[in-house]
Amino acid sequence: MHRLETVRSIVLTLLLVPATHCLAGDDVGPLVRSLWLVQRYGTTEAVKPQNDQKTKGKLAKALGKEAILTAAGVQGLMEPTTFARLAGTDGRLDSDEVRTALESDTPESRKRLFPKLTAHIDLLTTSFDMIDETHREGGDRLVDWIARNHKPGQLLHVTVICTGNSRRSILGATMGNVAAAYYGMPEIRFHSGGTAPTAFNSHTITALKNIGVEIEPTGAEAPRGEPKTANPLYLVRWGQSGDPAMEAFEFSKNYHDPTNPQQGFAALMVCGEADAACPLVKGASARISMPYLDPKFYDDSSYETLKYAERRDDIGRLMLSVMMQVRNRLGQAQPIH
Image (cartoon, rainbow, N blue to C red):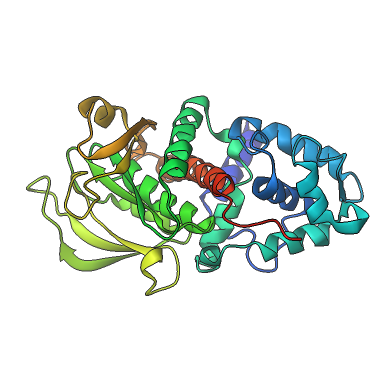
């Protein structure tokens, strides 16, 4: 029993350490790099989250001891013509060539993200198999909506809605904006709103700060949803200071607050209460249900920090998977020749 408790303590301690993995100079290994290559150049089926585990298994087998990809090894994961363009005359991709292909296609907006945040996002892209069926279905609808409505160079808006606009909706909006920048489409902007606003929760702030998002109080206060609850205005930044594509002002507000889009946006319902309370979302051109359990239930418990991090990453994985699929469908970048 003593040994079991010791192991449990070590695991919890490791999970609580803020993400600092895969920073500059670290090597994620050939499997992860090959997975990223497939996520960029793979078939539509290979990059779907429900096939993520199968894709990783096939890549692990294809790499073998020499860590070299061949057309036969990635059959079904990439179109033969795409692999041929990437591989060149020898028809093979070694680890260095995969790395070069990835670096040559890194979106400019990803380079402007904070390094610690990029490291955490890199990790989340390796676990799309953890997205459950309900959220995959909502993600598919969001992919379709963005792909249909996206116009290069024009803003396209998504509003993430929960009841109090204090936890899940702000996590969703922030991770959505990070995902859009990571995949080179910062013109897709995510906002947050609620049906009964309260305040930007302090545990939500901590969860985002722990992965490298900068959140600073402005000293101003927004209108209160609850008379006795202060509603501070914060500057949330996920990339270079002064870049408007890398920051947003956040506070708790009704989803149709004047600071949010009023028409033509997609509404993501991330909690059951708001989903039930808003059968129609004023001004939305799409309403997509994707409820998540509220981390509030773990407040003031020993699991509090872990559960906020868990919800942040659950929503983050979905947003990343969505934006990856949108980028591929829209053909934002061409394979190298």
